[in-house]
Image 1 (cartoon, rainbow, N blue to C red):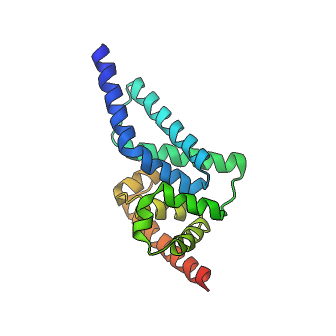
Image 2 (cartoon, rainbow, N blue to C red):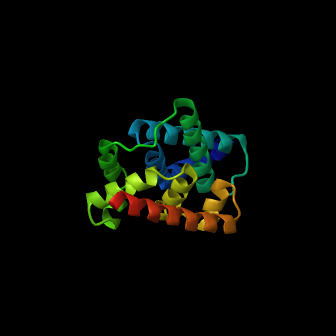
Image 3 (cartoon, rainbow, N blue to C red):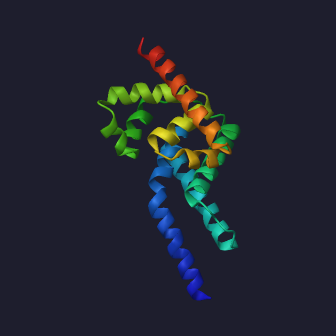
Length: 173
């Protein structure tokens, strides 16, 4: 009996190590407040742990974590009416949260432009852009996270990218 609990803990720790940083990054991009993103990430892992302890079969833990996190972000928006505007300090903090962004963009100015454009998109498009382009999740997982078919997820990626391009064109003018 004790061995099962140790094995479960080891599985949980492995999941935490593998996904905590990226989940925090996803939450931060949506709420633009580091402490809130940390709280949401921690709560997502608490819910995962509770599911694991209950014996529920988890097919795709990463997709489940993103689904839980996304639901909690939506709840935060409903509860606190979080504004979609990204303050300059949050944009700079985002560079520290997700270092890969720095490597992908030529300069902080470019990041600020993209972050502003993404934050001005509809929430469903912002989620798609973050999950697909920043988190680099496959379409199959994004479809699972958002409750869509794979084809619908591909269409949303295309529409979100089109909306982002339009927004970038608007922001740069």
